[in-house]
Image (cartoon, rainbow, N blue to C red):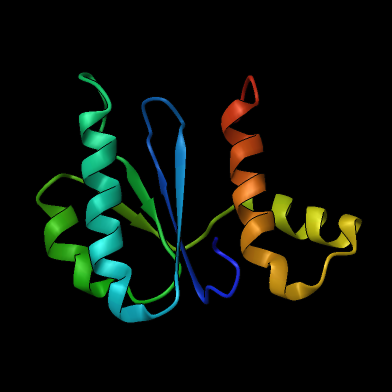
Amino acid sequence: SPNGSLYMTVLLDDFTKFTAVAFMDTKEVVREKVIIMITQLEIMGPGRSAPTMVVSLSMRSCVHFSGRRGIRHGMTVGYTREKMRALLLDSKLPQDMWAEVAATANYLRNISPAEG
């Protein structure tokens, strides 16, 4: 469960617009988690473009790994962040449930028919 996590990383595949979200308790595991996420996106199918890495916090350690794969870095979570805020406010859940709400927002984004 992502509950209790302090850090969130989001990867966006430019080709399919699919996003993957991961939660971490410490910054030290961000690099390992991002490498796993990128690898999983790469093996999901041929013809996929390099993902745009949308990150929160401490991604400097991933620059070399992702740069070799043509992955671009961004520093905003956009839709997922805004949807997360709306869901959290509307549900009246406690703030410490942010990770579950973010995962739900990401799921809703992925199953929506179209996202700009």
